[in-house]
Amino acid sequence: MKKWKQLVMACAFVVGLGVSALPVSPVSAINVFGGCGGQSASAVCKAQGDSATSMAQIITNTLLLLLGIVSVIMIIIGGIRYTTSAGDASRIKAAKDTIMYSVVGLVVALLAYGIVTFVANRF
Image (tube, rainbow, N blue to C red; front, top):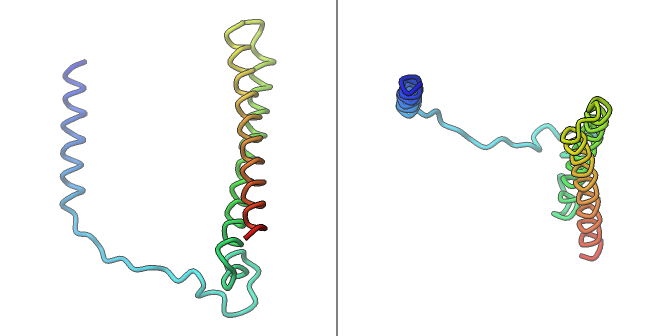
């Protein structure tokens, strides 16, 4: 087992050296508003002339949507784990914890949305 560990570490070291020896290509910034010449309906084009508060609201709304989707999926997974636990106490507790943590995460996300909306409307 020790030989495998040494072999893996040696391979990682060689790959790391190889990656660091590669030439770096030049990079430049991308103009995200370049495609907004016409009437585009994307959120980026709509926010082109807006202030930072509207950009924060767009970002918050997008993250809230993603978090809501993940939370619903985790609640469903917790429910499936609960129904398939077959009376095992540790599996029941794990399933209940999954459901509870996903609901708590959803509540925190909704509170964050409320705080961002409140602050954005005040200023």
